[in-house]
Image (cartoon, rainbow, N blue to C red):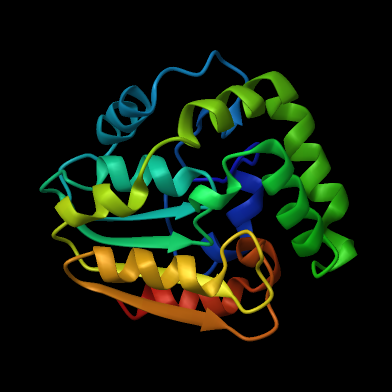
Length: 201
């Protein structure tokens, strides 16, 4: 699942190593109106096939992935930089953390990110954030029986270490993996490292 405003282009390099299917949903590669979070999760579950499957979410889509992960076909969950920290629920809190993370990102990826944001559109992106931000991913994770791997870059201020640890502790079977020197866009900047994590599952 691509992150807020992103689409299949964000994970293309990972999928060249580890084949996978990208599910576009409103606010995450699609400009359609954004339904409630549980409806988004139901749309994702409808695309799972017979299973077993490993669900991979990046950034804001981690909330949809966790909501869908109670499905018995889910054999594993990988959350890349989950941006569900309650401290980011205000626009000012989000903006401050986003700026602190953005300066740690390699600038070569900016055209790719902007192209994806343009395709999804600001209306869908804002609507997704408003729908998803109040949801308690840490509480939902208590119901996920599949192994959960939380991945964060050591320079990611949108997913600080204490928040990642809180999510890992909430999952019945959770572990934390940190990528040294990475910020938030690990799907684009560290595809080999992310691919190795997926291959280890």
